[in-house]
Length: 209
Image (cartoon, rainbow, N blue to C red; front, side, top):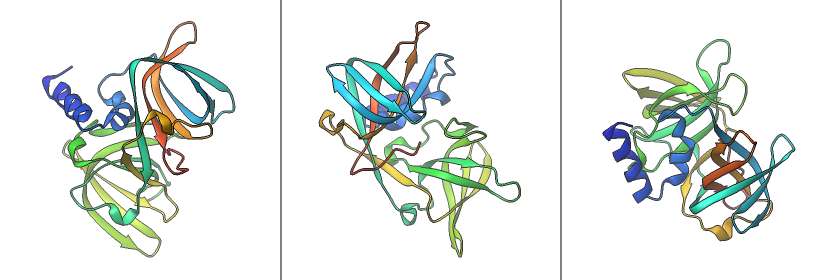
């Protein structure tokens, strides 16, 4: 890991940005054992978290010593301003700009985390772009943002119904049955899953990432 990446991780932890760090870890290392579990909490007992996944199966996750929890809360498309650093999952639309399927607005302290464009597993053919907003325009059919990253530029449209979220403090008390979560962890050869952080949706929000 580079000194720059290490410094960025320390900044993220100091800012309580463990959620964003978990969501962008694929930018730091391509680990074949890494897994993202998305779904709703079935139960939490000690260090054992059971999640009903979006695929319909139950996933039992062993939480590592010192595990942390971070919150994801609703934001508005109007909150996205030029200069903001965002993570946008998008899909190609055939012609014209890609269409956003979700947008995460990073805290200012997380700017630059996981910068770049890469495949994402939210939906088939989806991509994740972590980048700085250079332009944001409202149109009749929604919004369009232009993103800059690593000397490149990408334009993405945001329809009115697109989920927009940002990060917020959370505690273990927020990990209630039925709460939506996304957990980035490691899957061992025997199928067991371990993780050191949990991102939970607040006020009924289902984490869209």
